Image (cartoon, rainbow, N blue to C red):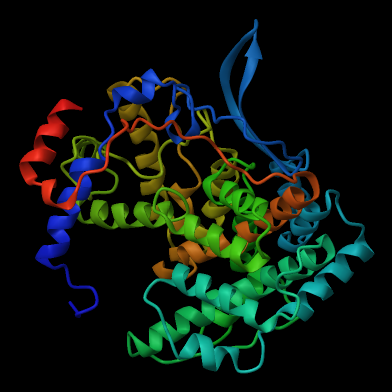
Length: 464
């Protein structure tokens, strides 16, 4: 461990002091009617705003009562299943078309879509020497931090960086949507070379190719990919584009945007949120859990072995000892996650083509058995089902994406939603978002320096 990151005894002592004085009694949250996580006991989020961008539905009204139903995700009112079925049936890539829909509010006509694709293709470039001076000279071990640094550095190249008029913000958002794959892939290539000591590849994107095609082209040494590989990645990007206004990274964008700050700062803040393992980093947890599971379960067809490992997970005896089966359950969905349903169908085709049928069947068994075990073990108010993170990491593995790029692929998709929400916030809200926190600190009198003894503090802590 280097000097900068060394944990000293002094820091540990100070941490103990901070922890001693920083713990809030759990019962006070109920006393003051504070909803932790901004969610009620049923998991429903506190209403913090209005949005016309996407809709997440997990319940329906029956006889005046809200009951769980199959999950729905709609972009600008359109069911995402219908949207994907539409462009997939015509053998078109959907990322650019869905970006148009989310940002501008309606489906594009053919000529509009072509012009929009050309615009994004033209923006798919970085400033002169940016790769050399920014990406290559400071390779990071975590690509989400690399993305944040890249986005914040682009601020310095923009002569109108602080202009938050809608037309300028739109220009900035479209440029970031176009360059995010480059920041991610080039950042990984720099890390792979300078940190891991492997060959260094920098392939320029082609303006005429789709976002999904360019990602695979830039990542792979030979720049080759199959049609199915690109289409599956494209669908994954579409499914990750947006998820209502209440998810952590999108809400972060609304909060930061409401302060009047620049686009680059708002997007970097959302990236910081998405990095967290409770949000965008969840699919990494799933694949790492499966890495251990595949070692522990010798026969992937033996349901008793699988069930035994899953019970160990729930008992905090396996993997990270959290008691969680990653990829199971969702903050909103109960009966089903529509994204997982769509994704699983296309993933089965990719698994067959790439020779991963046995592993896909293993995932399918784990999904079924985990659902049964969790339902029996825990009383869950809204049921439990597999979420999209359960399968997305597996898909990235099949495509040969390194683990370091899993969450950046999420960011590459979700920046479209962040862009739409940033513009929506700027157009409709003029107040800074400022939620309230109830103070529980008792009033105290100033203590002269010579009276600040340990005995004094211990006595007063006992009295509080």
